[in-house]
Length: 177
Image (tube, rainbow, N blue to C red; front, top):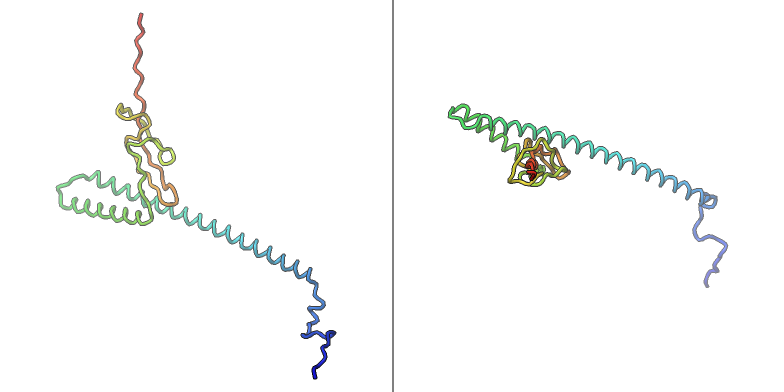
């Protein structure tokens, strides 16, 4: 025959800790632990963001230094100009090659010159170094660059220093008598 079921007895033994447990206290402890973990995660996120900003600033500083070196190389080549001396010509060729390699390295990081010539002054990418009269260009047009400006994917590395056209002086009006 079949055995009678005893509903007074638990089918699985219940440990005494479970019987004596305070579920509200356990939930509070668990909530405190979650809050602590969230705070720790936020602190690490802030620290990582700060480290990334510092690394980007250091990288931008390095790029700015390399761009200054590039400017000096270009200025050296311009000053030497065309030479008939074989030794000087070799120096010019090596300097030009070095400048080209440096330009390619900068391009790999997305560094590019800010285009300003013939365009209206953009104060976000250029700083006015001076003005010059030019009747052919509207006032505020960039006529030449004193220093090339550069940008990269993270923003402006350095602004261009430019000379802009100024409005020609007004001609005196004749007063009729």
